[in-house]
Image (cartoon, rainbow, N blue to C red; front, side, top):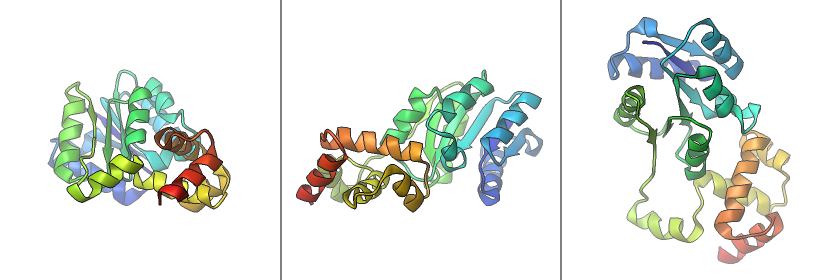
Length: 202
């Protein structure tokens, strides 16, 4: 069995590799690493894999379509998207792109290992978050993830997508995804209305 890890951070690749060997039962020789999407595509061209685990931030600068590109290149391998923290719209985006799984890095190791085993067995795993009792009202009222709130705060300051991307360290394509989700969640027609509604609700 061969699993390809796509992550720009060596420490994250190493931790995930250790998890695959210790908790999933993979042989060390079966774990292949790549630092970028382009390198991952080269690795896939050199030999097939059963699973590709790709970090969002590593492929972020390549636009919103990168999971589809990776899914097509990896076929018939399964693709799992690894995110820095759970975000509902990103989970939906991963699913619609053809990925077989989505999990946050902030999850417990047991959950990540179980998700990997499930996807390797032919299933799907798209993480969902159950808010704590104290958070439930706020989540229901605002319907925004922590990252979306950060983007909305930047919108209130009148920042462009490019400026927001630079400030938050994400791609312009990802900012666009967040802005679309914010407009839908708040019920705003445009960025200005979203910012105005947000100020009013606060």
